[in-house]
Amino acid sequence: MHDVRALLTPAAFGGVVATVIDNNPGMDEATATRIVAEALKFVDAAATFPTVKITPSRVVDEGWHALILHTAPYATVCERLGRFVHHYPERPDPGRHDPHALTRTAALIEQAGHSVDGELWTGPAKALVPVAANCSHTPKPGGCGPINPGGCGSHGGGQGS
Image (tube, rainbow, N blue to C red; front, side, top):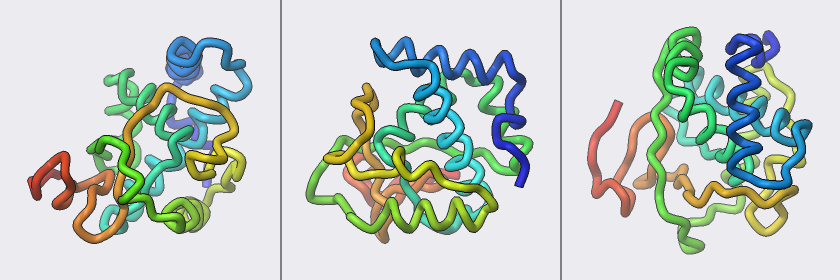
């Protein structure tokens, strides 16, 4: 697959990286760049496999949040991928944690044609860097996925597209 950075203009990519840095004082630009690239890979995988419930790591979710804040470039990314990838956050709950979810998500990202930056796809206890993102996603039946929410606590079984 192509370099996911090409989904954004260089200026837009730089703007998203700057948002990650702004939201995480002390983070260096190289780490923020890695986080945004992984977020783009995640969005690509979510668009490519819309019926599979996947979840970003907390670190990658920080990049996804920053990307979403840049609404016009995010909409363009989703258009290029052929599907809008919605974000349905849940408040963190250790009871919903699935230790295998990140492994499955990383495998799907690889199936979409990307290499995975493994240091950024760890569980919350092993995160490479602390980040401001404080939501989680439940990628299991009855939970929330990035495309359509399920019967999670945040959405009470609501429907989305």
